[in-house]
Every structure is written in structure tokens, then in C-alpha cells.
Length: 184
Figure 1 (cartoon, rainbow, N blue to C red):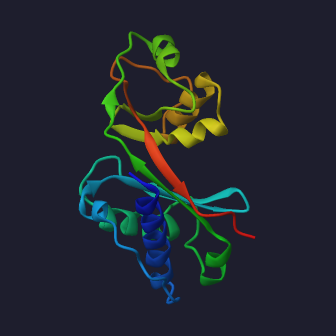
Figure 2: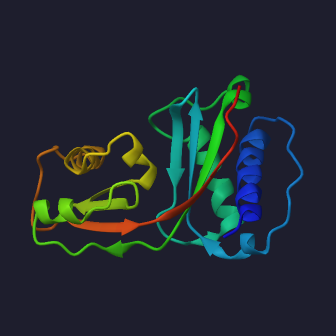
């Protein structure tokens, strides 16, 4: 996807949040790709700190609808944070990640899985014992060590950091991401 799609997704994400808060919205540029199915994650930050992150792991709807729904969910429905207040929007930076389809990672055991993960490249989905969690590839920036990355992903799924079982499944995916300019 090109930069035009990225800026169109960013504007739609911000507009979805602004509309919920009763704030003015910006004109939305057209991009044909917005009508195609896609899976997005919307990440909100303030002063470099996470303020919300919600997304879709599978393609279920057109990109336009997906990014709007995930922007609203990141702003108002991320259980780790209180809902975004109107006074916060101006200093909130938005990043939209467009996911590639996830593919299973073939591995023999935990050490083999860790060896096969590509820091900075792979988004990872972990499934085990009826639980599921993901880290976007961007998480590698703060967790560059594969053992720690995987241990914290297990904890995000509600499992102990040292958990491992034969039913563990890992899937990897990539992203194309766009980010608003740094808020001042």
C-alpha cells in the first residue's frame, strides 16, 4: 500500500475518535484500497507512552470500517486505560498498522521457536490453553531479546512467563505502518 492509503487511514482513525468526542473532523481523502478487506491495529501514544492499542488479527471488513472501529476501541475500550478524554486528543499520536495474513510458525520446542523468531520483523500471535495474545513487530523496539519477548507475550495471554505445553501455537505476521508526526 502507498503513503496515500496510510495518510487516509490515519485521518480516518483520528476522525473516528474526534467524532466520538464531539470534536471537529478533517476532510477525508479517497483511496480505492479503503474498500478492500484488511486487518488493522491502531496504537495511541502520549509523550512516547502507550495510551491504547486495539486491532484485528483477521480480515473481517473493509479497511475503512476496520480502522475506524479499532481507533474507537483503542481510545475508549482498551481495558488497560481509562477512556480517552476530549482534552487528551490533541496530544495523542496515532499509528495505524496494516497486518499481513498470519502464518503458522513451525517449531519443535520453545527454544526452536525462539531461534526462528525474527526480532523487529515478526508480529507474533501465541495461542495456548484457550488463550490468545499478540505483539506487533513494533514491540521488538522495547523488547529486543526473543526470550523476554516470548515470556511477556505469554504473560499478556494470562499464562506464566515460564509456561510451555505441547498445545502452544505461534503465528507470525508482518505490518506496514504509518504514524502521525510527533505531537508537540
